[in-house]
Structures are given as C-alpha cells and as structure tokens.
Length: 415
Ligand SMILES: *Cc1c(COP(=O)(O)O)cnc(C)c1O
Image (cartoon, helix red, strand yellow):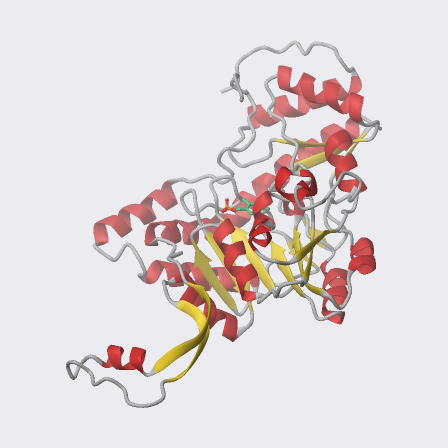
C-alpha cells in the first residue's frame, strides 16, 4: 500500500534491541542450554509476575494466542452475552467469532477511546458473562467502575494489555486490575521478545493448571478415575503410563496446543523487562514534546491524556482534531506529504465485514465511529525515533496546525 519512504515512520519496531539483548542471545546459544523449556522462560515469567503484581504470569507465543486461551478459560456457554469495546485491534475479540455467544459492543469515551463505564452500566445484565476491553494506546481504562459493574453481575473482565505495558492505574498495573490480562510482545509493542510472544496474567490457581495443559499439548477437560482394572505397566519404570491409564476424560473442553515461548524469546524478554523504565521514559518524552507542539498550536487539536491517577504507556500517540472531518483529512494529507507516517487506529470493529455479517450496523457506537471517521489521528511515537525525527515531527505538526496548507520548507534529509 505504501509507495513511499517516510522520514518519520510509524513504528514497525516498537521497542529497541541492543547490546544487552545480543549478549543474552550469544550466551544462550553458546551455553548449549536447552532452547525450549529451560530456565529463561521461568525467569521471564517470574520477573513479569512481579512487575505486574499478579499471582501468575504464563507466557505463550503471541498476544493473539494469549487472548484465545484466556477466552477459553472463561467457559462461555451458548447464549452468554459478552460486552466488548469496538475500539481495538481485531485480535481482542476475534476468538468470539468461533463461539455461540452474543456479542454486544459498548461505546467508548470520546477523550480516552476506552470503554465508557457509563455506557457499560446501561448494557450489563445477568446475561453478561464477560467484558473484554483494551487499554487504548496504553491509556488505562476506568477499571474500578468497570470491574464493579461487571462483578456485581457475576461477569469476568478480560484486560487486553497489548498496549499497556509500563502503564499504571492508581498505583497498580494493567494486567492485575481485573480477572485476566493478556499481553503481546509483537515486534510493534512496547517490549518485544524477538518479534513474537505473549503473556497471560491472573490470580486463580485452577486457571494456571488448565493453562499449563493448554499451552503444552495437554488436554483441558474433566477427568475421573478409571473404574475397573488397569492395564499393568509394561515395565516397572513406566510410572507415567500408569498415571495416564488411571484416569479418563468424561468431558474434553479443548485440546491443547503448543504455545511454548522459546528460550531465545524469553531471554530477550527478561532483558527488555529490565530496560522497560528507560524505554517507557523515551516514549513519555516524545509524547510530551508532541503535547507541547499541540498546545502551542492553540485550539483545534487536543491530545489524548491519561486520567488523573494513571500513567499512560504511550504505545500510540493520539490526538483529536476538534473541527472534525475536513480538517482532519487535510491535516493527515499534509503530514503525509511532509514524510510523516500517520495511522488511524482502529477501524470500529462492529463495522468490519465479519461483525456486520452478524447484524451490527453503523450507529451502534456513535462515539467510536465519530472518532475514527472524523477526529482522531495517531502519530509516530516510539523509542526508535531519533531526536532529529522528533524535532521534525513537532515542527511540521506545529506548522500545519497554525498555518494550514503552507508548504513546510525544510527538505534536508534526516539521519
Ligand atoms: C498486537 C495486539 C494484539 C495481538 O498481539 P499479537 O502478539 O500480535 O498476536 C491484540 N490486541 C491488541 C490491542 C494489539 O495491539
């Protein structure tokens, strides 16, 4: 689709890898240690659990797999209602397409683009089994109100934390604010485990047991002891065979898969976790510069701010064009002409073909629709940007907001 090279590009790589990650990989490869299921996965999971403040943190191969397995653990039944945000990446809710559940889209808050708790409170009922939300762009959702509403109706809450690593909410971390949290360590995210990876965080021990089966080719199901005689062990040391024969499944809920995070990915993950404060600080610094550029430009554009008591992880830098669609289009085109890659995340999910086919229509979530079609803009904001790129980004933004349409006279290439 893109037939140009941007001078300030959107993050293809969200996090920076450097000497420390290379050293971890060199040491792993030269040590002869196992490349799967060794010490690095445990180490990364323990570090992550401590960082988030959850009882369990279990790694998997991607954020998508984390969401698929997390949604499986909810034991949704035919006819259950699941309330979801329409303003997220498709993987947050895609697993629901495979289930016979009723999905209700809950509109978002126009300032944060997070699920609006006031709307949720009007939708939720005894039929609601689960609520799925994202911390949009790294801005924590209003979790106290959301979990209070959900738990009052016996519904579980899943946090998609793919953007939220590094964020905080009244002294706590996304991933430990509700029942289950799902993280992505994809190439584009605030921390990457060599391109792909994911994590599931929660407190329940029974989920840890089931998830261990699910991610390592076991079976999640209900077993009972075998009645009658057992076949004898073929050889005395074959205890394992004896254990397998001693129970049988009365109900298989789901066959497991292999979602083991590789040792190389986990080793890099631990290094990245240690560098998270530095990586987050660079994101915050760039976001602050962009906020200033918007503020100096005066009225007409307003930044996406985290509510009081919360810290934004700045996975996405978002702002809103108050005057709406024509001005936003002009601005986006001008920024693009100046070599700044702009994105609009995310197309309201209830209007994608797979959800329209299930009867969802325009008008169901007016705030999310208005924001995507008319108002919001996402700019590059990631630790890979050089100071020169950030300067250019701010200068072009300021120029275009204060003197719309004027050519920006600075064509020197940026290193
Ligand atoms: C990236 C992302 C995912 C999917 O994660 P992968 O690791 O790419 O599978 C899910 N939800 C959101 C909001 C994301 O941004």
